[in-house]
Length: 382
Image (tube, rainbow, N blue to C red; front, side, top):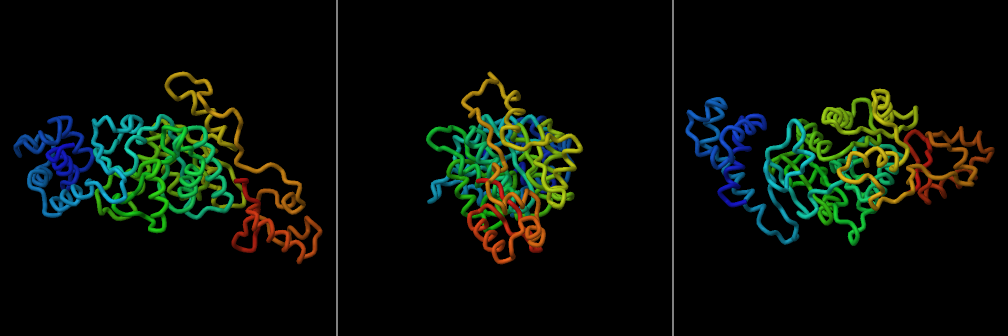
């Protein structure tokens, strides 16, 4: 992108009062942004309002400062990561996203440019306050997807998003796979990381994948940014897996958007006693596909891919999100729902000291999670 093109694109998308709909109308009417900004005010007012035309033809000081800031951001940096812009019509523009009703006019990208357009994408979303079992499920599913050659797309948020990114990174083979381990679609400008504690995770994602945003540099994490972020997340993919979600979770917005975009929606069932499972159960009642393993998801998505629908290098074995039965009396007594210490004492017949020692050993081995309220829960195998 030449400097003239860069300035014109930013002038178009950052002009005050010109949203994506107006920008797309202008592009359809006049062509490239260089041609748009060369139009007379009268010509522009045939497509947009006079106030919008004024903002477009006479950029504010803030817009000019943002253009210069973006110029600097695009320059080679000491971290060696590529930074680039992806406008509508670019060969780099993700084809799945282009097919949606509201594709972003301009995307900001950072990471590995050659890994931006993976042919197999699955989105994962879920609670920011998941149970230990939900975190384990997200990691196991994402690890399996990556091992099968699928790119995991999520939103870099706390909880399920982070676990999905981490699981995909764990399962990715940089020597054998041409796609990306994971892509993160964020709800801020790419010059900041939100939440801040995910700075190291964001850097790891950039080593084998890409960070994407439609928001300008400096954009803060405002509430209205995230539903729009979610439509990109689902639009990039063939399907969306909701791992764990409360009834009013933002993940349900992602699922609704995915359904409206014609994407497959999957949900993992959970305990009937866990509030974090109720959103998934509601989705299943509404028609989302109940899944118990990564292979359940892949079996449904494979026929949607172009070309042959044979194994195509996928492993033939199913990877379950729950561990096999363990020959251990406490694990057998736990089952898979949260359980109180008193209930375990009754089920196992052990004395309190022995049971607590067994639970501590299982917790240290990563097989049991200690939950709020004095409850214990069996964890999925990693």
